[in-house]
Image 1: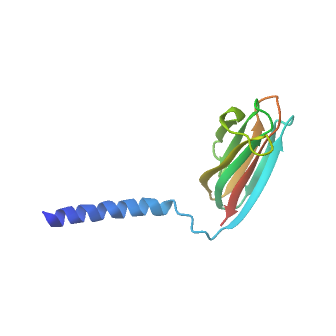
Image 2 (image 1 turned 30 degrees about the vertical axis):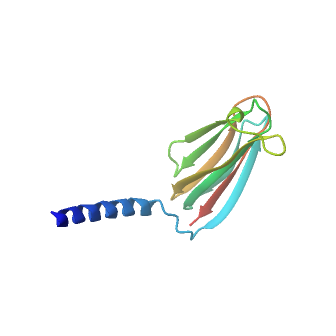
Image 3 (image 1 turned 60 degrees about the vertical axis):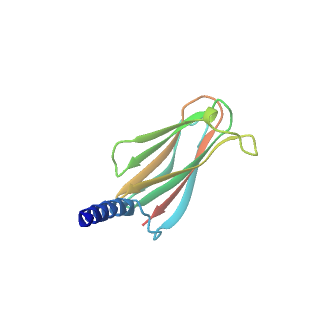
Length: 136
């Protein structure tokens, strides 16, 4: 009976360790940051790379007014766009009076291409983001 429990626990820990290992970033990447800001322009590329592999580490965005909103659009390996919608009303102001998201951690893996765009979705103010990313 005890051997059965030990084997079951061992199997459970093996499965948990294996799934956690899939999310590990080995740190053997070349880190970069890119940024783009939009106001009257509707959108701008932050990153537009092909024939590369790596991952998006995180994003940080600022809004110039309390009524500004925007989107960050990720296109991974040429697939369907994945959109994160952000609004200044959800975030506090920083020391300059702008609304700031802080760093939003991510681990978006890409193997052949990555495109990250910022899109202004409200007429007022400016919206911009910095993206932390790395190539393998």
